[in-house]
Each structure stands twice: as structure tokens, then as C-alpha cells.
Length: 138
Image (cartoon, rainbow, N blue to C red; front, side):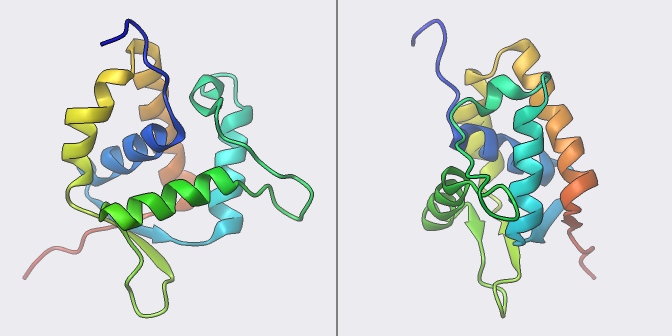
């Protein structure tokens, strides 16, 4: 394994989703304006900018759009780690296996400060995108 592995956009998203899942969050609105705008703000933040080096944003429209981010979401859906099967596709539902994927394949790529930045981003995700927690089973 190389001394430093490149952190790809899918690694960042998988990390965020895994941390959210660990915190018992289940789903978030599939609202591109909110989601893409939040990712763009995080990219511009000095604390997390290195995690977003490979995210590309088009700022010519009324919100910063990232085809990179859409491709990551599409890939995670195809792999079964993220679902959008709810009645009208209003929500992304975080799949149960995303935590295992993160622990086994993705987390080792993140080093000290990067992992702390990812955890801080998960807190920002909760504040800005407002995911919903799993309902208690009865």
C-alpha cells in the first residue's frame, strides 16, 4: 500500500454517510440545491478543502452544481450503498453496508487531521442538510 493514497470524492461521501449511519441517521432529502451548495461551501473552507480537491463545481447557474457529486451518488446507488427507492425519490436512504465499506476500505486512506475534518464535516452535514434519524422499531 502506498504511503499516501489519494482521497477520491467517493471516499469523502462514503465517509460522511458512514459517520451519519453510525450516528443513527437514515436518510436525507435529495435536494440538489441544498446538497450541492453545502458541498461547495465545505470545499471553500480551509479546514476541509484538501478533501475536496477532486470535486468540480459549475457556478454558472443559480447554485453551484457538481457533476462529480452526482456521479458519486449514482455510483453508490448502483452499488447498493445509497437508495432512492422511496415513493417519489425525495430522499436518499443510507444503506446498512456503508459503515462496513468505510471501515474496511475507505477509513485507512484518511490520516489524523483528514479524519478529524471528515468528522467535523459530518456535523456540518447534520446542521445544513438535516438528515433524519432512524425510527425506533416497535
